[in-house]
Amino acid sequence: MSDAESPKPTAPPPAAQKQKRRRSFQPGLWTRLVPVGVVSVYLILFIAFNTRMTKVDFVFSSTRLSTIFLILLPLGIGVVLGVLVSQLYRHSKRRR
Image (tube, rainbow, N blue to C red; front, side):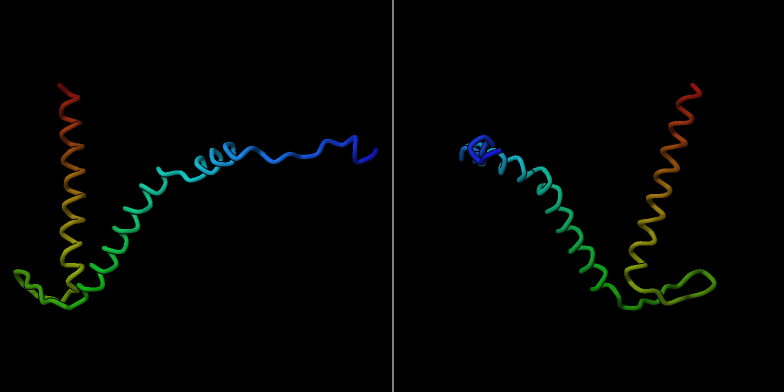
């Protein structure tokens, strides 16, 4: 076989290269990644600035907690209670 017989690869036209580049850009990916990055940085700073210890008084005792736990613990309890109440509501609605 000689070189004349084998087909030579041709470069795609410039318009095809632009289309390929546009498809690989994926703007939807960046519209998701940028907000996730911003929220991640915000959460890291939020935790870093709320590390001071705070005294918490209960009815019969008291303790010292980091401020971040004082914020996140009620948030977690609220989320769990919200899910449980919504499940109970859905369950009671099915019985009717």
